[in-house]
Every structure is written in C-alpha cells, then in structure tokens.
Length: 589
Image (cartoon, rainbow, N blue to C red; front, side):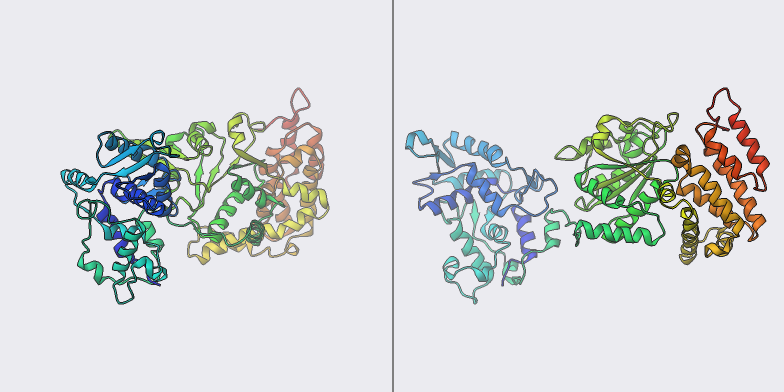
C-alpha cells in the first residue's frame, strides 16, 4: 500500500491557501461531469450546477469531526474561512458562476429551455485559465499546482490499488507522486482548454519527489492539524455493564446506594436532561453526586468533574464570567473547561451544589437554551462564542422549596422541562420499614468504616489533617458492633425507632444524621456510661432540633430518652417546643 505522506498533504493545504474556489471545486467538478458524460467541457458543455459541486465536496472535502456540525467541508483554499457550510455551492459558488457567466467570461451558461435538456448547460470558455490567472496575479497569487490538488484529492487513495489504466500504465519504478498526478488528471479531465499553464501549473517541487509515500493514510494527528476535533474516548461497554461497574465502585466505598439510582441518572443524561437530586438534608445527595462524578471520570478517563457551589447571590457572572472594564473577558471554570474545551466530543461532568439557593434562570439560562439548540452555542463575555458539548452531564443537588421556603427558590416550568428530577429516597427509613429491630445496628459498623477509610486515605496520600490522628485513634476502637456496649446499642435502637416510627420523623431522620450520632458515640470513651452520655448529647445537640410536626410526634422520643444521663436537658428542650398555643411543635432556633 502506498499513500500520500502527511507532510506533503499538509504542505499542499498551505500551498492551496488563497486559490480561487473555481480552481479547487468548480472546475474539477465540471471537468469530472464532462468526462463522465463523454462531452467536451469547452465546445459541448455539460449539465452542471450546485449538485455536482456538492457531490465533489462530499467526496473529497469532508473530514471527520468538524468543529461545527453545520460546516462539514474543509476549505484548503481559504485559511480565513477553513470550514464551509453545505449551502456553499448553492450560495457563494453559484453567485460566482453567475457573475462570470453574466460577463460572458470563464463560464458560459445555456438555459435548459434553449437546449431542451433537463438542466442548464455549463461550459468553460477557451481562455478561462488566462482570465482567472490575471485575476490571481492581481491578488498576488500564483498558479495552482496540480500536484497539490492531487495530494489533497488523493490523500486517502492507495495508489497501488489503482488500476494501471488509471495511472497511465506507470509502474512501480516511477515515483508515486507522478502516478498520483496522472490519476488526478485522468479523474478530472485535465488538460482542458488553456487551464494547464495558466490557472494550473505542472510544476513539482524537488522535495516532493524526495519524500516517500507511506503504508497508511493520514492519521488522527494530521486530521487534527487540518482542523478536525480530537476523537472522543469510546465507551467500550453497554449501558448495563457501565451501571454495574459504577454501582460496584460506589458500594465498595461503603455508600448505601438506593437501587436503580445510577441507571436513572445515566439514562437521563443520555436523553440530554439535567439531573436534579432533591431530598432532605442527610439523604446523601451531595455525597452521591460527588462519588458518581468521580467514579465516572476515573472509569472513563474523563477530565476531573467541575463542582460549583451555588450561593444566594449567584448569577451568570459567577457561573460563566464577565467582561472587565478594559474589554477583556474573565471566564469562570465552567466556561473555560466546558464551553471553550479543546475536546468538545468528550463528556464533561458538572456538579451544582445547592442548585436552587439562587433563581436558576439568573445563572443557567444560557445553558438551558443551548441544550435545545442544534448549534449549542453560548455567547461569552468579550464577544467570543462558546459551545456546550453534547455530553455535558449536569448533576444538581437541591432541597425542596416546600421544606425550606425561606431560603430556596422555586424551579420554573421551563427548567423542569429540561430536567429529570429524582427524589432521593431515605435509605435509613426504607431499611427500618423492612427490619425495624435490626436496621439501625446493621448500619453502624459500615458508617464507622467509611469514616475510617477516609482518614486512612488522607494518611496514605501523605495529606492527613492536623486532627486526623485523634479521629483515627477513636475510629479504630469500633471495628465491629461488639465494640459498643449493650446499653448504648439498645438506646440507639429505641431512639431511632421513636423517630422513624412517625411519618414526620421518617422524612428527616436520614443516614447523614445517623452517621453523626454514631460518630459522636465512637468518639466517646469505651464505657457504657460514656457512650450513653454521648448518645444523649447527640439527641440534644443534633436530633431535637430536627424534630417537627405535632406533640404526638415527640412523645415517644421523650419516653425513650428518660433513662439517658442528660434526660433532664432533653425533657426541658421538648417542653419548650410544646409550649405553644397550638398542637404544632415550635422550633428552638
């Protein structure tokens, strides 16, 4: 096999820059049409138009992965506009043909009504080459070398596979560049009229003959130099296999994964939706989002996920960027890494924490609009334009407006339309419903183990925090459930049951809160009295402040806490919550 070498193809593109589009597109298309029809392109003419030019562009000027989907044609004749739209033949080229034909120069058109043909007949004037040569000299551009056209048109051609007739019977003793030139001339009907020697040149630089052809056609590196986007990494598995691997990775780290959650998120992303995780604090929204994004990036070798913490005053200048007083743009990480990425075919993962602390449309409006547009373009500060990659996977966490109307914003209908909204289940509540007697205790050692692993990882990475030694010392004292006293285990089950046994309690007592209570016990001395005191303090400091509902929702909790060391403190707090004009519990803060 023998293909044009990448160095010569790139050289040819440089040499073709500035050539008249007739020389690169229109004339080759017309000459090929005339050759195929067995007609003389000058005396006879041929049925011709944008259809033939478009066919030529489709065959020889498309490269994989153009920067813009609506500009598929690489235009080596124009470095200032290197990619052209599909309407280029019916627009620019048609106007050029009409202009020259109207002057009776270069190209002549005879309407189909005059000839009885199906389409208009186009032919070259005998002096077409001289006329265009004069124009190019005025533009300070020399003749187009046929060898450069042959290298471009034949860049994917194995010259050894071409029949001897197509290369004039030239054998292997002749340089491959000469066989390629002969192929091009025969394919596109050259010479014709005065084109060769005027518009076109037979000159072949000596270095072209000194360069050997290669065993493979131009590769990805050359395509990227020509302007193709880098290829995206492929996902070498189906959706089910990817889901299984992600689930295994998440669960290996001790995360209590709700069944089917990973698949729901991935399916929504594949549809093009933003995924919003909504639920009570402690249901694991942020932890799940962070873990899933990290595992996706690691498993599929993606760029690190971008995490954006939304604040109440968040707007588009915080999310995308702004224009400085001197006119230069100041772009945020999302704009730099996503909208201006050099690898727009690669997936990008963006985690938006506390998504609805600010009005979504004040900072995400441009992105929401881009998800619905074919071009996916977004205007950036400073007059530049970014593009939202197709696989921009947004995972947002938020608390419900109904639960926190003072701090949370409503999500508008247009945003909902572009989103998949998943309510995070209360895994702790589900486990309790399945097995009230054992659900809480079955989770204790796992919660301690997860925290212990986090500390151990920081130490293994030589990045322990100042107090990690204290954390590690306490966590190592609770390796199994048996390391805790029977008294604290019984009271932990009773307290949890008193809360989870009510509908309001089940809505707020989550894995996150259970973790905090368990860690409070873990950091106590390993004696029953110390552990019970730690549990009682966690109830007073953490759980009582979460309780809401009516008086009946807290009565059982008062009863089960009666034997804790700080029972009086807890009872006083509960009395204050019940000291209102109605049956509703009053918040202490």
